Length: 401
Ligand code: MG
Image 1: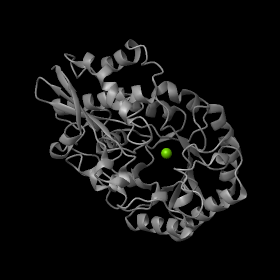
Image 2: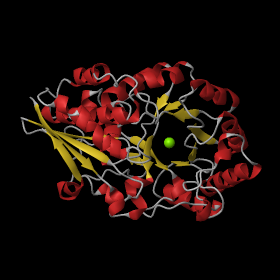
Image 3: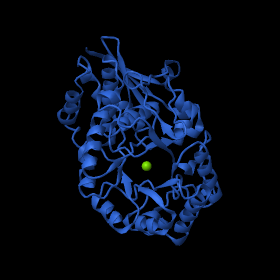
Image 4: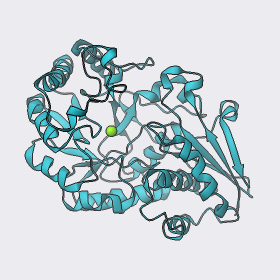
């Protein structure tokens, strides 16, 4: 089997849905001489970097032409060690490697008529408990910024009514009491130093409103997107300890593993992180210092399914559980479900509010959503997902042959 071409799709969803103006999934499709194709996603759908992700395939794809797509490990090694920048490559480079790796696994699954999870260990977890993620945007199709504690309580109730027993919220992302203080347009630098009493009070009141709305049995994950420094992360965690937080995500920048360890030593809430760590080497210090309870590798950023599986097994040695980070398109969801089904240290699956948006769902053929808070892995050969050609053709960027 030989690879014949790679198509790249630049899905600027904001053109058709302004509420997704910051959302730009980048997909690829690898085609072969046997008529089997595989799809992959670069994990830079939000933040800055999608344009670079579109471009990285101009560098990475030409050397794939003529390769046997079944030699996944050898292709991974070639990118990692044979491209100079592969070692220590950062999110743009690794998002490209990840998309290619996922597409190759899709091809392998189709070639051997097996879903990917069967090729990486089988069905360890027949059902995957999911949580409703990022409730500071509400929990419905109309994503928006929430400010008042009662709005946070309402979002929490909506998610629980949908069957989730676990929810996640960032109670500091939107500061002030209304849209005009939106943290996205006016970053609040003081978060990084020490928190002001009103910052702690605002976050606490939002979390407390959610806890009171859903009762003691629902798990609440506290997320702060690395907006805090070591000292402010400790301040916030200590202030909310009585609300029984399940785990505390990205309390501070995980690139400094000693900072993470310091937070872990000073607070009584387990820590999670890893959506901005890449490859096994990016996780090494965090794992060896045992400061992290839940790792959150993004399959579309850490180096694909190949590298995700290795990182999950590596984490197992250090008693760390796994929630694959999912904040992208439907390919990201499918890849994550296969990994989480196979690994023994799975804890919970992330279901983001963007996964409820129509413009996101229609990019692909199948719409995988949890039922009563639980996902099942796709049983079709490969990823169990396909691009929706009718929609995706308008996002076609270029093809390498
Ligand atoms: Mg996060």
